[in-house]
Amino acid sequence: MLSTWGKCIFCNTKISTSMAVKHFSKCSKVNDVLKGEIDAYLIKIKDKYSAYYWLYVAVPLDYTLEDLDKFIRDIWVDCCGHASEFRINEITYPSDFVVDYDGKKSMKTKLSEILNKGLYFEYTYDYGNSTELKLEVISSVKIKDKYIYILGRNDNPLTRYSTSDKYIPNSPRVGICGYTGNKKLEESKIWPLKI
Ligand SMILES: [Zn+2]
Ligand SMILES: [Zn+2]
Image (tube, rainbow, N blue to C red; front, top):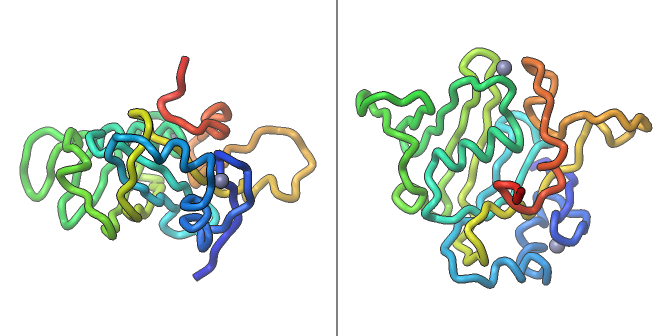
């Protein structure tokens, strides 16, 4: 499997997807926030088709799919409020959910009710010019506060050899539908951002 480079957001160590989980288990700065009382999952989120874009995040179990959707929109995909959906164990959870029918359920479902360690699931943003993601529940962790902690993130493949300081979003949505990105969130360790 192709693994690509990025960094630990907490200590800036260069990591690849193949060494990320091992690094987090040893990283003292990551372990500071993983020594809490709040049940959470360590989740890997990646572009379904490209190895370049990935995130490792710790998400509280009593967050809902709607929270996770908001997070993914904020950090990676939202251009102009298109519909999105998760697909988990044959069930679809659409953002424009109306009533229970045809295997569709509401995103207002808590992660504790539907996720478990080792589970893979999928996410699509925008049914037209889709951005498709794959998610994996890596392990159970305990976190300090009720935030999504962003532990690791890929290096921007588009600015690696660039000398220009023009901001190019680090996102699988870059170049699609006028996506402008979120520079502030690209350096943040937590979501939502503290104001
Ligand atoms: Zn680290
Ligand atoms: Zn758009």
